[in-house]
Image (cartoon, rainbow, N blue to C red):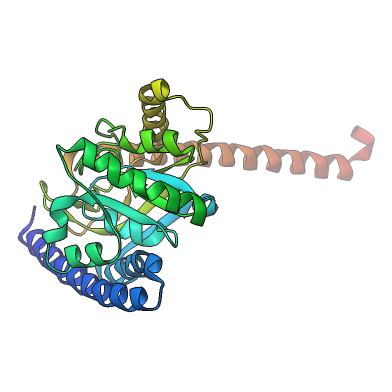
Amino acid sequence: MSLWGRILYHSRSLLGVALLSTCALYGVIASIVLTCIGKRHLAQWTTARSFYYVMGTFLGIDIEVINPENLEKLPAILVANHQSALDILMLGRTFPKGCTVTAKSSLKWVPFLGWFMSLSGTLFLERGNRKKSVETLSKALDNMKTKKRAIWVFPEGTRSHSTKPCMLPFKKGAFHLAQQGKIPIIPIVVSNTSTIMNSKYKVFNRGVITVKVLDPIPTADLKKEEVTAFTERVKELMERELELLGYSEAIVDTDLPPEAKAAVEVTTTEEIDASVEDQDVSSKDTVEEAVEIIEEQESAENPSQS
């Protein structure tokens, strides 16, 4: 990577942290105000929007959503693949009103962001304490069903930082919760974002991330002993969609991971070949049409010869 690329990577990273802290501070204030007026359930939604509009604008990153209407089919448990810090922009673009997110309990101690999450009703899950995590999620069930709200879960449990369109193994907590409450699962698939941001290869580009919201999957007839197989089926479905979405479209200011670079080169070559074939066919069609016109003109000029 060039010196300029490294400068861009580090400067954008610092800008991202500053913007994140600013939006989180806004979230703290919004949570306090909304709680006082009985609208606490909107705190995460309004703060999420600020993450997207403020951070996305300054960092040059846009989010394209396919099937956004599925986000309105609540109550539901939303499950999405988890890749990098850019997921916060994806959340900001797609987060439904009244939705809450799950997070590891250690995040509550992070300045600004943790304060906002604590005040806004985030469901903190303790790693290694499955019983307590289940209790936390179970308490949210009644509220979800009666008020038609949602819980957002990253079933991988941590960021994958993957440079390939793939996912880590899924944890089953969200799916057990869906089975217990007979609440639909809505899978959300995000294109691989390593072309936009990847810390290992010092990648931080501008670009467009594609998010596809799949149709709700009912769980009304799902039995407890079927949850493991159900979890795998949902993961396989999401991985197939991720393969189709591929890599996020990037304006390359810094660099690309090797795997993404190879995929982009292959795609470019295929597009060029297809373009050449189209031009050949078009040229052939044009010549054939010209010959037909000439023959028609000659026939019209010499009717006796026809």
